[in-house]
Image (cartoon, rainbow over all chains, first blue to last red; front, side, top):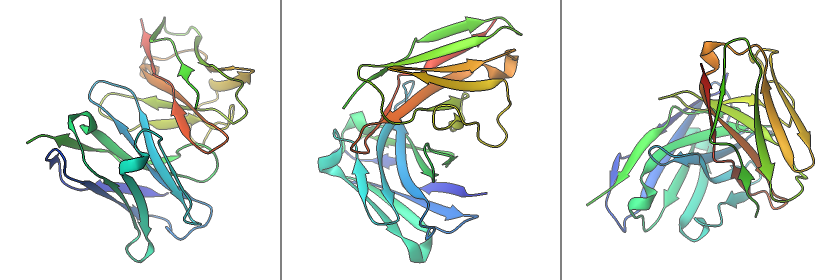
Length: 118
Length: 107
């Protein structure tokens, strides 16, 4: 059973970069069948898709975040990462990493709360 | 891109059938998926590719799709089914879209 765990700072200052890492266990991040990605949930609100990356290296990003966003994979560490630049208070949310192989997001991390504040 | 619209809330009594709809403003040509999220927990995929149940999801949970509307049906609702439910689909460019979510209340 694939397991995912997010890590990163819980507080980021406005205009800085939000960086999160998701560590994968119970399966190989090198498996070409899987894709890896991020979804966030502002407090009290619904799910917002951020983006995902496939084994081929192809990335798919939310149009609203595309200009500030990078998702990458480090196979040597069994991790994938999110970098969101120039954050504002609107980026405050619970950030989930996820994975899937055929359709929807089948595996999720427990989520990590990131607050943007000075 | 496109939008997925869900009713904000659905209420049913235990043992009844709950139907949660998800309407798109364009014809869906990609699969739809459904997630259940309980307070303080990560979402769980309960229906994949319109109607497939992942391992561990009970048979009383089902999904269907017709044109611009997909429907999640929970038969014989239990108290434990009370949760937020989200639909999700994608466009031809691979962009994912989520519905706004439906709070299912078991009376």
